[in-house]
Image (cartoon, rainbow, N blue to C red; front, top):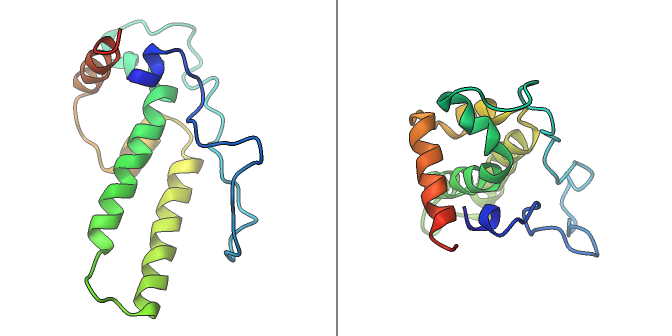
Length: 133
């Protein structure tokens, strides 16, 4: 909610030099989110459950980070060999690619496995946005 409260529109991850891709075999794949500029086709949310769509662009990096942490904790094994690390990183990259390509907030919430009430998500987001004002 802090980035929203400060009026920041991007994730803060893109630099003037662009994103670093290294020598990864999937370096040609897109590294930015699919545009959600017209998520619902509605001009303004008309009821509480559609507030999630109003905040969708601001929630997107937070939910993606949640997915990243979940996948890392699921994949972590102490003393994993190089082959195991490579397989884990490929699964992690595929999950992140799913997040990047999600078509809307509802799709992203499904990918993340978040079944929380949308109103509760919005209230928590608003509380965070107010905490820095």
